[in-house]
Image (cartoon, rainbow, N blue to C red):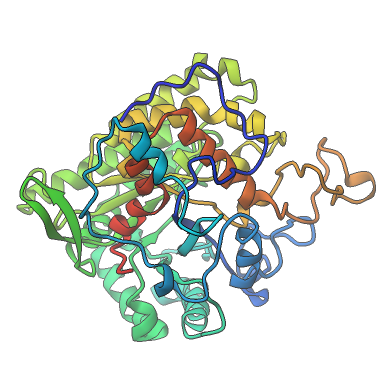
Length: 457
């Protein structure tokens, strides 16, 4: 696999055509959903209607409407199940004719969306007191699980939620995790619980360094993370080894939310130390050196939210880029750990950019990520519907109203309905620019998600 850009830079001036290297299949590794009953600051402290454009229900039908502008949604997932076998994959990587022949989906102008991974939505948590009852903390996260059960039990949507990542009280240690899991399983029911592939507990909002460090250095936090690897659901995934395909057990995934831009590089550095401590605990428990069985799987959301500059040519010259690259390199050396190609549109939303400008700004970061992690540890994610907040809408009427319709601190009352398409288009051309080979593209678009979340398609 090579990463050298072509002599002329690509620009995402239009949605990819079948002549470009479109994927045949896609799994969206990062979407959020919530009902009308949770579209308020009681259920989500970050929702403050009417100024927050996301403070309304966002359901599967809304996601399907957004994504279907770019991709094909089959009536049944099984109708387009991808070949997970690696048979007949020994193509000559230097053969341009063989490479080009497989670029376009057979009889389909659009790629197929196999499904999506649901990520928890940062439900409201009460402020803890010394004498708090642990269960009082679980009200809104358990309501989220009940909502997910209603989605899983519904047969009205063709799109599959392939895996679920709810919240969990990682900071309550092994005892707290066991206590919460018992309640969560009961609320979820067997069918929904079978789709739970891991958990998330956001720490990106902890902007005071002392508070952040106290949390992620605590013994309870470390025990909670270790519990995920030791007591995970134990699915078996196929891995390519020297002797061919073999199966390995995996623990639960932990989705990592840290933020260089608004928090600081120290969040990335401190969490890298945290992952290192978890790996040391695993080694002490007898987990074999390079093996992944019994280890907690970490997934870094949104490239750890880099401190982008909207002045693309200077991005790689900034101290923040150098620090981000150093931290990402450190994290990449602590497998099993993966990276989500997601969240960029929102991180650049303080001054909404065109697709071309976004492409130019993020290219150095994406190139660096592929150098550190490789394509087979990176996965596509849309971050829908958050991806549509603050994104410039091109070639359509302005959805702002009145004197709020400028970018100088105005409020967008609606999100951009074309954001999913825009991000898909940008990712497609980023892979073109980096000359990512066909088989490695498959990993970015869907195979990495299959491996990380133990999907059985």
